[in-house]
Length: 337
Ligand SMILES: Cc1cc2nc3c(=O)[nH]c(=O)nc-3n(C[C@H](O)[C@H](O)[C@H](O)COP(=O)(O)O)c2cc1C
Image 1: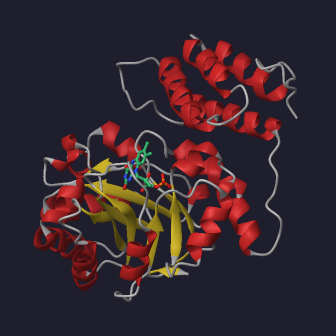
Image 2 (image 1 turned 30 degrees about the vertical axis):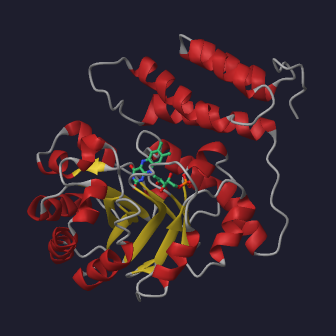
């Protein structure tokens, strides 16, 4: 499938996740296969336009991640257009606009999901960006603001007319945040009303969930939390979609992924907290954040997370990961496979 001229080898996408889908994580997930597109954490248009180092770092990416989409947020058409130019110059394949973030810090500045309440402003942003750059402009939105304002259908048409080349819909309202369940019937209905690709997002936790959702009339599926729990989920879903059994992942591979992530963070990325944290501290925080998802439902996972959250150095963290995943010394006494 294609987004504008950008060819995706698979319709399965790593969904944007603030604090999580950094360049190191995106690279490692891409290496596991099955992934057609990776999307960055949301990046401030204001920071990009002002050339703030820390913001520019969020938008950095590597060849290995291509095609890569950089997601930006903001509410001002001229600034969003300028930010899109910055992202294009940095080499992104796609620039995505966040119209789904419900966090008040973002939404109160007429950005994120509050743009869904201002469809004319939202369309103006897409029109300005589409004129400013050659790369495809895409939009990620929710069902609407709340149950009384379910206007993703109207917004989808308006942004399509304004030049958007694809849309992603997270099947919840801003008010719901992450509660309840994602409404895939709603997403499927909208997919029928526009001629650009529509991707669905929400609650694909197992590879089989992705296969089911691919049959709902969408062009592709964005997977967020499922990838944080299982970076192989896209490869496994593609196995199933192509008629193979889903690949099995050993505890050792799972442990190696964490160690590789730690290594990339330590050696090849810039800590985003600038001067406020040492690199070691920053990496420890990043590993803790991933581990809170990564070992959910795992035998002995809760105890492992306590160990990770109390580790005070990289050496200690590495030791806990190795003991849990790479040797037979599980806290629950179960042997690692
Ligand atoms: C920790 C976290 C951070 C997120 N950050 C973003 C973001 O920066 N931009 C965005 O459009 N969506 C963001 N989302 C929403 C996801 O991209 C996705 O649409 C949502 O989690 C539903 O999909 P899932 O059930 O597969 O996780 C975030 C979700 C999580 C859990």
